[in-house]
Amino acid sequence: MNWKTSSLRGAVMGLTVLGMGLSGCASFFAEEAPPARSIIRDANLVDANHSAADALLTRAPWLKERREPLLAATFVDINNLELSSALGRVIGEQIGSRFAQQGFTVVEMKMRNNIFVAEGTGELMLSRSIREISQSHNAAAVIAGTYAVARQSVYVTARLIRATDNLVLASYDYVLPYGPDAKALVAAQ
Image (cartoon, rainbow, N blue to C red; front, side, top):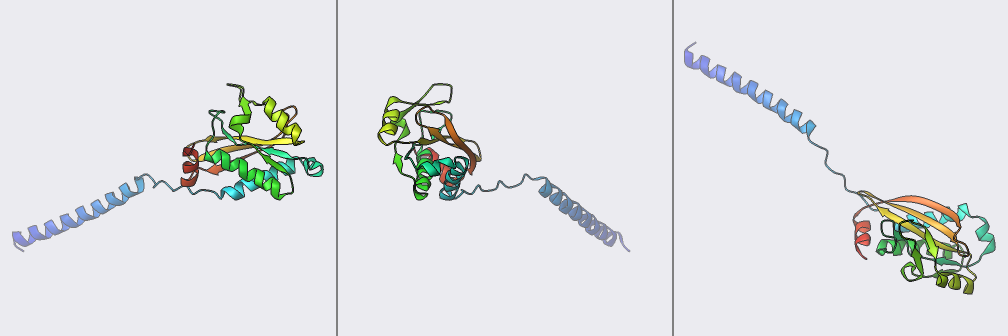
């Protein structure tokens, strides 16, 4: 064998070994790459909010027997209890809607104008106008609540609050995925 053939074979073998080594590196780096971020899909808000209403009714079964009217309020952002968004309005309306579907008389009201919050305490306080509204409609309770927006979820707390003394009669916590629809509703003040 002459030196040219020997050199050519050596070069081919060297390139083969190098190619195998590089393909091994490629698979090594591919395994180490961070996983692709999954797309967050929205929940069916109607189903989630109707389930919340059903859970409130389960926790206050005596309310079904009394059949007194309820007031439905807008849910507010836990970080600023004087503000809400389209999401807070939708939650309040859909929970109120479910109560109406269950045979309750539901009186709608917008929380921003009728209920104030004690700054820094997070406690819901009923204003004089709410007491007057509840008395004029003989309302047993107010459907109210809060939501908190996180990176991938929206945490919701729904409550039935007795109109006469602010006593929490029933409460239910649930989580909504923070998908594109939820983000659009939160952004819509």
